[in-house]
Length: 104
Length: 87
Image 1 (tube, chains in turn green, red):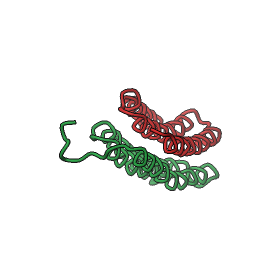
Image 2 (image 1 turned 180 degrees about the horizontal axis):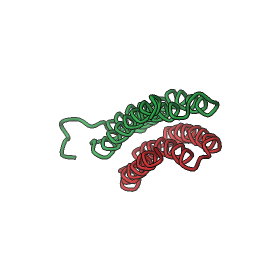
Image 3 (image 1 turned 90 degrees about the vertical axis):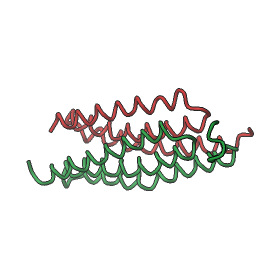
Image 4 (image 1 turned 60 degrees about the vertical axis):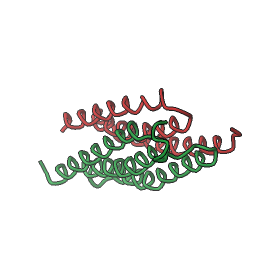
């Protein structure tokens, strides 16, 4: 098993770990903005690590270059989409979670 | 190595099923849009792993690229539409 394969396995496992924590945050956090905080950051890092691992496995070729292009695009686009959704939610009146109304 | 890729793809499919709970039962439209965006991100990686398993990565990579673009554009368009809607 070569060095690049070990590196790709490590990157894929790290990406899966961050996908898992982001999904737990999406299920367990109390309101809309905290859920976006979990998925926005966790999914961005997870998709970057996973695509990096697949590019390491593929090696230097046109396919690996395309995977890296997708990774860079997702690294720009995912925070933009998260920001757009959270701003739309703030302007259309979704109440943020406070510590006082913890029972609601 | 194929078994490892298959295991990672299967676990990601389980995570998609978990996130689908937020799409079905999530209170309000904004939670649903956020969960659909997260599912689209996981589907991107699942498509690439399927391409490696089927030995057709050169075809699946273009599908995956188009999926990333459509996920981003759909998310931003839904945000713009929900922002301009009068509650």
